[in-house]
Length: 124
Image (tube, rainbow, N blue to C red):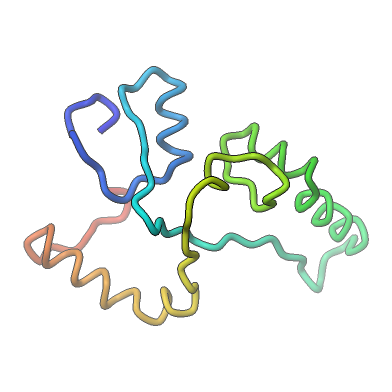
């Protein structure tokens, strides 16, 4: 896709497309409504050797300043206080519990529809 040989790609992550664009690839992304995204998380181990420092770091990452840093690294900011192309259209977050519970079902359907029943290999 990055070489321009594939005219259409349905499940592209926008940050990957933006990275490819910065490297000169002839690509662009457009969300189909509603677009879908995966939830991300940040957590704190209950056995952290320095839990107060870890909590402060977590709070910083979730702050507007921390989200701006993530955005500058071509990641999607969580905070709507940080301007992002992703704040400008409707999207749904996939329920992670549902995704885990039904993952094998959807992998099989994708395989049957697009890969002739062959399993997707790790790294493909």
